Image 1 (cartoon, one colour):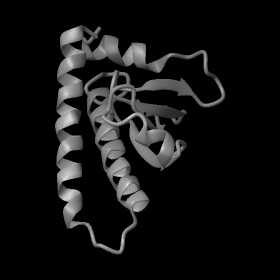
Image 2 (image 1 turned 180 degrees about the horizontal axis):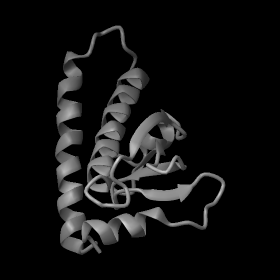
Image 3 (image 1 turned 30 degrees about the vertical axis):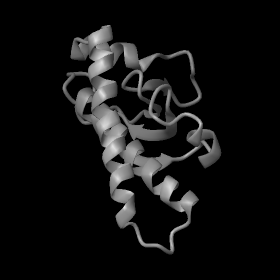
Length: 136
């Protein structure tokens, strides 16, 4: 991935983040600040997941990849220190590969995701996807 690609990617999601913050004024008042932040985090996390999935599906190897669930693994206070977006590690998300292998994806603003086959952290799936997408 070039610096230009990374910058474009970060700018795109920074805009999404700003929009989410701006629209939180419309969130029901009975939500606590922590709940509002969690809502924002979930929306951003889903945006990253959708981007990752759409890029992965452009490759022959990963066509048919499907998201099966989301596991949030970072607490709100930890995330609050990483906003806005630079170095943001939102969650681990599970995906089922076309061949049935389940992988976990760590969402981040610096790359599309850090892939590892479940129980095998030595496999780097993102490099294969990046090669297929043509982003280095």
